[in-house]
Amino acid sequence: MLKNAPKFYEVAKRIIEITEDCVIVAHNSEFDYRILRTEFKRLGFPYKRKTLCTVSLSKTLIPDQPSYSLGKLARALGIPVSDRHRANGDAMATVKLFKMLLTKDIKKVIVQDAIVLEPTFKMEPSLRQILNNLTNITGVYYIHNTKGEIIYIGKSKNIKNRLNQHFTNTNTKSKKIQLQTAAVTYEATGNELVALLKESEEIKRNKPIFNRALRRTIFTHALYSFIDDNGYINLKIDKADGRKKPITTFSTKNSAKQFLFHAVEEFNLCQKLAGLYPTKSSCFNYSLKQCEGACIQEESIDSYNMRVTQLIVKNSYKNTNMAIVDKGRDVAERSVILIKNGVFVGLGFVNLNYQITNSEVLESLITPMENNRDTQHIIQNYLRRNKNLKIINLNN
Image (cartoon, one colour):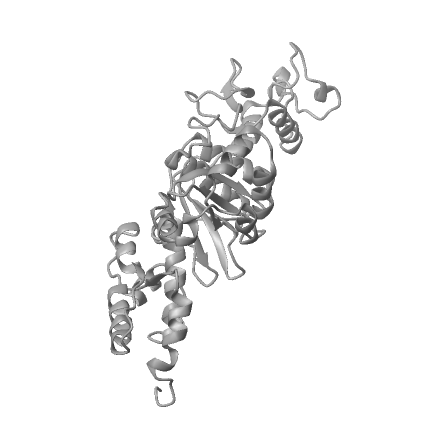
């Protein structure tokens, strides 16, 4: 196989060029780097580069794996490997593994260290040059200062356009960001839901100086249920209260009311018991024969409550094991949001040929994330706005 391959000295110059100012990423990088240095030493050249080892990173970010060999790790994580033990096949598998590790590195230690090492960021940056290196994709972006520290985190359906706004706005906050910007890194998410969840999580975790330290709650109102004196399930829109468990949450009171009007129509509910028509007698829809009469106890309690329960189940993932599947970062990939026992566990990306059927298998692929009121609101709101999402019910 190597009979007609070029000698090392014939490709040495090209290796120097393509690795200049770069960090070499390899699976067991100590071995690969030692081989490179040995060959360059024979040519009398003192080859020196920074390296990152995906074996060490995997042990830190994906603990408790039975094996950390590239083949077994790739198989366990659903990473397709072609031409195993050949340069191109192993390199492409390492790229996919490294992308997964970057996603799991929620403290952004890898990226920040790389920025500090990168010499081009030691000089005064050109915002235009930074902008030219960005792309028009959906994802989360990180603005760094000269120390590599993250000073702002945001998300956008079009990262390049959003950063252009940051760099051209004349308000006080934008001017401060412009003065301190040394670099921008970004992470493609493939869809808005992953971007929203990652932005929310990483602002809380990294606390950038230009993101509000105590970010205002992104939802203000919630839908609650209670049983009245007659035994009927009533619905009520109220201000969001962390001490109560809502059916779902909303960014504004108006969006909550619009949702409830549609729900009354979809599930043939009573306007009065839904809190939309205050009256001591029958609701308006009863006079139009569009209400079965729960408002005046004509409809049976069981019949009415069954439809309200259907509404609650549809808009709440309590006690549910499911995976929300959406677009990935490329055509051969899908994103997965994992809900286990009604709790948001985390998110990740899987190849199309990987079977998404079991929550335990999925947990090794995803980045664990905190379940809180913000994440619940983000997921529920996204599900309401995107009716055609693929939802997979998982085995326990």
